[in-house]
Image (tube, rainbow over all chains, first blue to last red):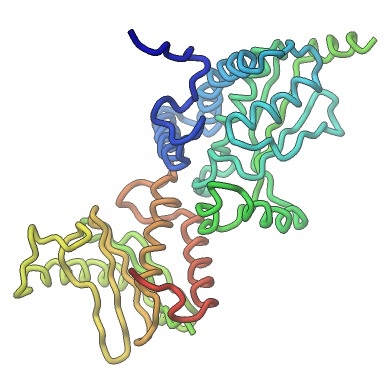
Length: 218
Length: 155
């Protein structure tokens, strides 16, 4: 009758319309995401509620991305260690969603249960200018929802929040070079002014998770 | 030497949604004056299409935008306007003889679609308050002035 259609889990995420394996136009995503933010903004009364709604929008994505990546990487063994799951999020998840690994993964000095994933150019806030009356809002809350979804799905309950942190001097100059090398979206970046801040996703694990991880050490 | 003076953007109903000096030599114009300039230009643009002895098909030019004023060349000033299919008019005033204005107008249109239209906090047809847009416009003017006249050939 016909050639067997590939299993839906093996098909590129963009569907048959995707120009190349697993890639979608940044503009399409930007417009869609802009509508998502506007939709929620008209229904909330505060900044934190808006962030929470964006986080829950991303949560579902996180759960599904975890399943998809676990399925596609056939030798995948379920991660049970904290550092490993964080590495998975900052490299494998980021690479499959955004084409490159997260820029850094750090451990907080003051709190043992806090970790930070840093991205210098998150796509959710590429074209966004937050008005001054919304001060601390970070539209990257969607991405922190994705991270929370992946972590929760893997059995590591965590609270993830997104923060816009102003770039330090040495980081500003270091980032103007990589942007010129980024493939595909290079021509888009040329017109936009260099970003003055980076997105830091603060991951705070529940105490049971840390205890569990500590017992695995022995 | 650049020679760019002002940029102003008029929405499809004739309201001014953005104005910005592009160099220090640009004369200071008060906000009310700007609103008057915006609506005056909008009306003249529309009248010019009607008054023109040559009527285009459907009153649209080659790019699908409404027919109207594209350039005003006066003794001390050069004004160029670029209208999009959606009726938004990007207007730049400059010293006579300034080159690359068409390129700059088109680039500003691209910046508008990127920094204003993709910004969830920007309301269509309202004044543009997106910081990213103003920074990008400044960067564009800087880039054009640095590369000298005639380096951006038009199609």
